[in-house]
Image (cartoon, rainbow, N blue to C red):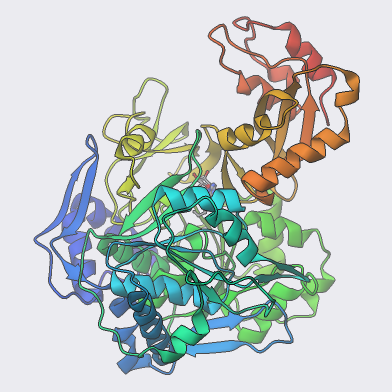
Length: 636
Ligand code: WT7
């Protein structure tokens, strides 16, 4: 286990060096010593970013669930694996031990098989944050089915698009979900989605809110009944290192969401290793990541990374504001949370609530605070550090992406220094670099450019489901032989990275990655809309919110009313979901365009950000007069 735990700065420096000097030797050593394999690999790494093709541990055979569950049974079978904290604090906490998890996953795996799911089939999971979500993910992995979890806040349309793209044959859902004081009719959303999906043969329904729902004969089945009758023994399928483990959709700058494909062995090794080190997890710690398993953060750092380390991982069903804004701190106290991992948008929302929600609770169990999803601004960083960490728990600002599978840039608690607003240093094995406009790598420090990675790490996504060409174009074409992240960054005088934000048409709202194109497509469906453009603008809680510039077909004053705004947001709600709602809608007679007809978003972005003095060159515009009109009527 020599290189497994990085516990001081000297070790970080030494191990980092060995991880980039001889990556194959380094990762082979980690893989041999810390995981169980049914057969070892023929080669550690084969890669070619020009194709692009990346293979880690080629030829190895394993099952990730044996690494996440079975191997712990002897040493910590009665330890809590999943600690489920329900939406309603009056409902009992569930402690699922590794022994119980083993049985539950096996039962579920047998149900999947019995319902006709085979190795390589895609299974869509559309569930709230209840134990069945983690269990169904692991059950798929147990039998080699590829899970595609869709966040249960997405609309019926967004769900249907994702089901159809990867041709899922089954969907697992619930009768409904709790969200604070509200309930959501999940099954109704699924029924609506399935009107557009002919590939789904079976629907498994978990009981959660006990509502009366419609069950379609022959298609829909209650999970409870099936599980009751299933055996709790299920042999783990033998998987190849490069067999797909899951698909997870993320927004791109254009059109369809991208089904990022993660494979088995490299993903397991990297998420386990980063979890152990970035959070400095110790055997008796209770770790809590507040993300939803519908996002990559939940896949890697609620399910796979923690379980591979035999950790106790919390699943929280509720929201930070229910029954009041003290809920997070109540849970921290109740379960003596050691590592707490959340998003800047939650931190800002909580910071706004006043300190009495915190003062009532004992937060002294916390050792490590984590942040993920978007840049954490200085004010939020200090609030988090002063009020939650009491200035004694290091904050790790973890930069990574759905595509990277695991944390890429972060400080390591009590090992490498933290610095507000900086993700700081590349993690072990990560060869980050900054590129300038002329495709040259920026050498030295105190430089700013586009963030790329020069060498594969084990959990890099291998392709986009059904569209390898798009994978190549999006990530490997901007810069030769490099993975391009889509983010801008700067490097300080000692090599710390600060992420400055997306450089493409992706906007991060409350830590959710939203492409502008699908939102504009939704808006343009409104019969009165001629054209639209979406940009982001700074928002105190969300980090970034959406500003829509919309031109209507029939330019009469009476159209420019709040009713139209409401209808437009309703369309977005239906097509994408409530997360993509526009905070500001400005009707305009035209949009600034280049002579080739391309909308100049750069200008619209400046106006939305109230930086009209920095508009830059507008001489190439086809219609410069429209800029003045937009500025005059801008919504501030
Ligand atoms: C994009 C990826 C990684 C899980 C959640 C988001 C932004 C993420 C940070 C951070 C600054 C960050 C980037 C990245 N981002 N973490 N610590 N500091 N920016 O996953 O939905 O794939 O979004 O989120 O812009 O490219 P995702």
